Image 1 (spheres, helix red, strand yellow):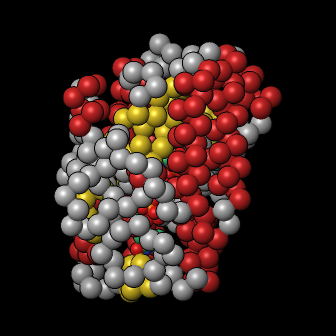
Image 2 (cartoon, protein in one colour; image 1 turned 180 degrees about the horizontal axis):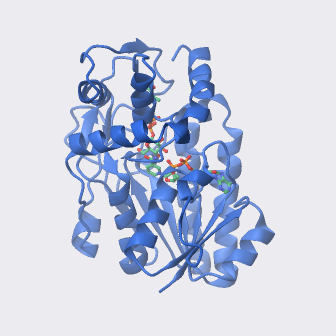
Length: 332
Ligand code: NAD
Ligand code: DAU
């Protein structure tokens, strides 16, 4: 049994991880989350008080972080500004949280000798051509495209430096695109599902040929837990479930599953610097640590996700109008 500090545990993947840990282990969890626009208390509603606590605060608050690190056995670091489109609008919060916030956690890990797992993204590797036979591996050079992905790359490099220079006991994972419950409506899949629920046509950036490598949030959680328990200190592990789909394919599947004509969507202004394709080779994680994904039927996973958004309109309705006003102002 461990006492885990989960940063960003009120966000999409962090909250899925907290649910996963409380359901599948005996660990205790303390969440540190600033509750930005992306954090939602309701994603953590009903969890057992004997094993779970939410602390509202900033990962860049060194005194608060120091106090929490003194109380826990390990830290899983999800907190971040996570949306590429927002980073194109205002990069500053991405530097504050993703870079300075991660630095603040690393200094605390160094002072308290606490094990830390840093959750990162495949976007640090840049993008692939559609016909490139290669996929990202742990040896792919860093080549981030956006303000978001460049700050995540910076945070990964800080973790590596703190391991080598100060002996901090850290691991890193870089995962592909997640889907599942509790994802903010600004993101691609929830935006389109909630558009259809509202009677609005889905919005596809550019031609819609861009490819993402989808993984269910529960598979990301099981991978992170595996790395926390069995990962080699200083190592990086790529997490992916062989789920490549073009954005156009995803929108057409959502429309079909929601009873709409497959062409009932609009092409809108493309994202600046839009990465073409991500694809993960997760051989190291599978062979070295014995992990494998459980949810590889993307269509069934999407169906369950659609059902969740239909059943939980109160969870997302408050954010929807503001998100759509932001996109409309950019022709998206
Ligand atoms: P999210 O935006 O849904 O959640 C981020 C959470 O962090 C929110 O609860 C927010 O309140 C909190 N937060 C932000 N700034 C904070 C600060 N300064 N102090 C404390 N808390 C703060 O993000 P997500 O999609 O759940 O992503 C979580 C992590 O996983 C990120 O590090 C992201 O880079 C990484 N990741 C995401 C994906 C994906 O597909 N979404 C894939 C790979 C990696
Ligand atoms: O690969 C991991 C990354 O996946 C994470 O690091 C990020 O935190 C996460 O947000 C996600 O990044 P993407 O930029 O790939 O996700 P997003 O949901 O914003 O967009 C997915 C794809 O869909 C992308 O090609 C852009 C496109 N898109 C997005 C929106 C919001 C559309 O075509 N229409 C839309 O309305």
